Length: 150
Image (cartoon, rainbow, N blue to C red; front, side, top):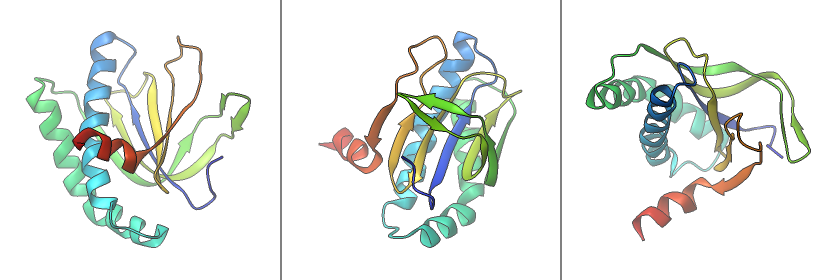
């Protein structure tokens, strides 16, 4: 279960075309690495909030550079604050529709599948694409990042 004092991270694809889904994944990987670097030394939700709020312009630049380096000129929006999440059911657990504190990146029209995880505390919840079985994969974000380097 996601703790009450959690900050989520969500990336929404422009559409479900293969190109748009690939772009979403590229943005997600790149921005997740950047955000993880900024949050690695935070020890409580208040510190995490401050870091995220102060670095939204940095995150915007990261997304812009990522899209440009991929030859994509799709518009995007980043919003940190209370964002609407739809209801989702994973492995019998219902995550209720509602507004949650989160960093949300919307690519283009934002009409495609999305990916999301919990940034703080660092527990990732990966949303399966709709055509998949809808199973949940839990990961520890910090461990995942360390595994990349060791």
